[in-house]
Length: 233
Figure (tube, rainbow, N blue to C red):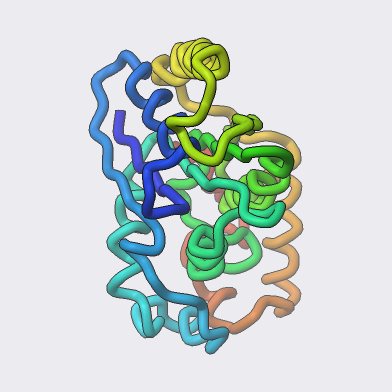
């Protein structure tokens, strides 16, 4: 199993350690690529829309493509982000902004429709769910059909401060989670995703997309006709 991990922080705190615990408990043979933000991508979207016409013209294409290439080749995606002010970390949000052409409304990637993804967040008090939600939402609009989340309050400022009883609960949860992930199965695309895709196809047909380049992209994939990305998996 090919796995790509995107950590929304450079330091190896509670959220990172929960993600590592999950990976360590996945029993099948795995090939893991791991990135830390902002160390591996310290850029913010400039809103120039250059990528709509040509992805390679993005000012940060070289840096972000290293990560996106690994994502496209993976079976499982794991995103970890601590709760920062009831939201994902700024570097994680920046990464999501820089990959917005992956959205169904723009130039979705066929490979996304057979992936599984997990979003993990921890917090000292409240807010883990709020940190997870924007990341999971972006993955849905990428077309990822199987998205699970895990958020927990650790009542501590760092991993060393987390009580052993709490760590034992997390360990138990991650073992259960990993058992499911160890089964190499192709996820089914939901009705919700299919309907959203059809809506976006109709938008492109009506020339309501961001650019004629997008419509051409959809035409070349046959998606304005009867072809569907999930049928080719």
